[in-house]
Image (cartoon, rainbow, N blue to C red):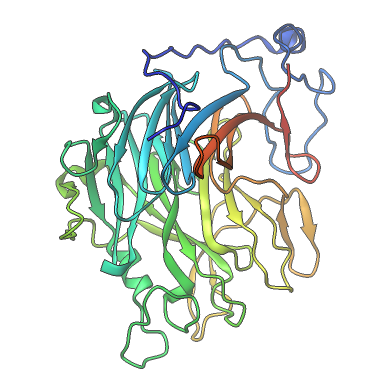
Length: 408
């Protein structure tokens, strides 16, 4: 339960956006106290632009949102319902729902698996998250009927709030017997097993398929990848694409003691992005439809031959190419998606990236603005609790981080 840092349960503050004409952007930004662009006429970008035009002023978004302090695992991801003004925070084994002021509306508790990254589906008004049960070799997309989250302590199984869809492709790669000894080595990275070094799933986000700027909304699910510097087949981020328009037939209530296997037999596409090995793959995945960019927040890798950045960005308008997947034990081809050719360039590998912590929550809210989670330990209750604050940033694509903190 929350300490005194967690907030009163209140009604919801609706979100309002104000989009100003480009000619008055700087004046409005100054009036609101939001950091304005350096000049009224942005420089011509050398790569796919972070913005088609200068960022607009926005109203009624606080500089920070408190996620509360909880007897749970650390924060894993966030999702925002911009229309109704709700924020959803995954704390590994519980979901916390707040308003934009950080007032707690309700929680869903009792997950025995690992609840990871989240995203809000504007099409059906529900929150989707990655959910792992590695000991049971079961991996799901958990779907939350968030309108039902109205009080603290609602149960993940008995409340009827959560349904789950089984991902067969993830299970097959996670359990793959890569060394042919006929034995599954379990939840460990110190093995030749697990295809592509897969440790399950974490990052999730909605957006169009790669190469289609205005394409139909798809669900992208990113693999976790074990850190193992002795392998060469684990240097790609792996993303699965799903068209969820027919998923209703697969939805089943969450049954943690007896995991079900209802879900699509195959993904609609599988993509590979060469970044070098990162510790547990893509922790947070986020698509920004203003810039058509995909953001991948990762735990830093440790292979000395790679740049080992903490943020990688993909140009969503770049079409994937069928190529050989480097590093595999046998010749294998797949759809390879290039990184955005911008940011910090590592010449030996050609990899671009940024130094920006975005591994426990990053969510766009429009016009180039993002909330980014900052996690910390809170001891104010007399014992350690997991806590987080969501901080407002603006994407610039410049410098080592690519982001600037919004100040007023």
